[in-house]
Length: 235
Image 1: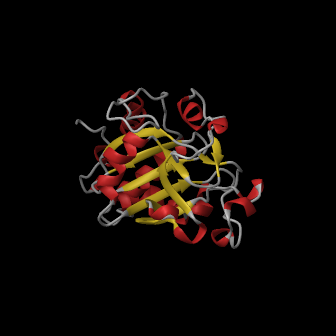
Image 2 (image 1 turned 60 degrees about the vertical axis):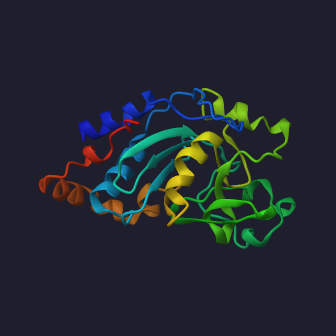
């Protein structure tokens, strides 16, 4: 467990990619430290193989941060994200069929859970990574048409997560990180996105965490230390 904590904590020192401008240059990002909940979920995924040999993402809403892993559980880095305006872990009934103008402030939530994410078309025939198509929650860069008054780029790059709640529920990520890291991994077969809760107990969203200690001990006992699956990328 100590090695795992160090491995995830070490992610904060990995150079992070990009801002919201369509540029090939990599820009510095605010330092991100992984929460205990992130460590716990990452450890469970690695021990159980819950990602089913697909790449995966962990989104920690409390810290407004995203952690990316390849299909083998290798850490590929982390970035700050923008999430839904309202706290809450459930999507409002029927929200996927509403126009944006019909969605009230309390409905602008990023739902928590385990989602099989795949690429598909959105408005304007733009391809996005759909986290949950039924509720219109996607993962994509800051929209080009976003109002400058929302200051999305500044919010994303600010040193705290206090101002990262601004979207209708989608997860906004830096464009360079999205194009160079997320899209190459997910564009063929998709992958899993684990969104941590901010109001519910974590076991209510991920019930299999209740048996995590047993899985972790068994996994480590077979000679496959969980921390070894969560090392920073060397590229």
